Image (cartoon, rainbow, N blue to C red; front, top):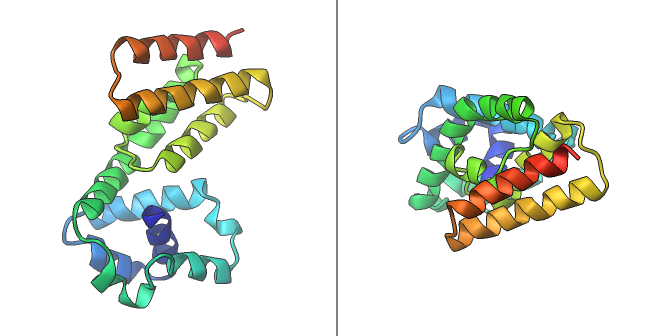
Length: 174
């Protein structure tokens, strides 16, 4: 939610977002990441009133510099923005080359994406790029993605990750 708020605020008031994030992050990476997120989140389809509403939720934009959590959350968001701007295009290309959607573990480890919802959006985009529509295969891929996210959350790695990657590949190539 905080990433979406900052993305919406950035689209109408970049200077405030820059002042909030600049002490810790590079502005060109921040701008590049928010431009990419704008496209992914389809914020261009929102009315200006809706963008303003999201830019003020959950913290009012007029006081965001004072009330936005300046702890691990800011660091986490900046790490994600930096990794997103550098790694997302490559992850999509690899996904297309391998013929399988991105894995939750890739989104967690390569993008450092702190949001499960955003990871799912990225997963869906990679499915769309592979022309995976709706149906039993997509449902199975969704289930595998959920399993992978749960395994990441619970800390089960290694063989489970390999098994899920293999199952993605097998489901897609049926």
